[in-house]
Image 1 (cartoon, rainbow, N blue to C red):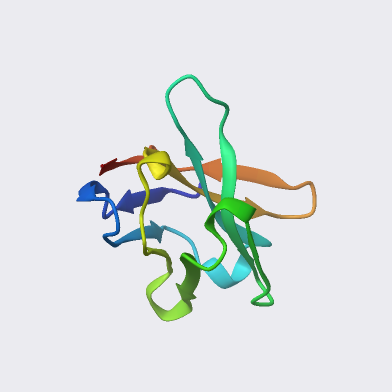
Image 2 (cartoon, rainbow, N blue to C red):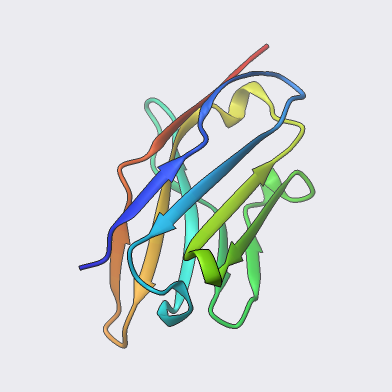
Length: 117
């Protein structure tokens, strides 16, 4: 069973930065991909950024140039560096891991990011 634990959320002013971390119980290099999703109040969960086992990255248009996803295989951790934060980035951010040929998706419990104007 894969467990994902997010940390690093909090309250920040617009223009500020935060770094989210997702610590995985398994070896992240064995995952097909890992990503960050977010869900704002009253909205659907959406993909923010993802990174494949080969290192390819993908970003939502709304965060391109501001957010960077990265991983540390030795620490089994994936990061999301968020710069130039905007109030519309306010949401619960969830870590996701895709594993296996079926594949199976695992989720963390989320971490709240609040950006004040």
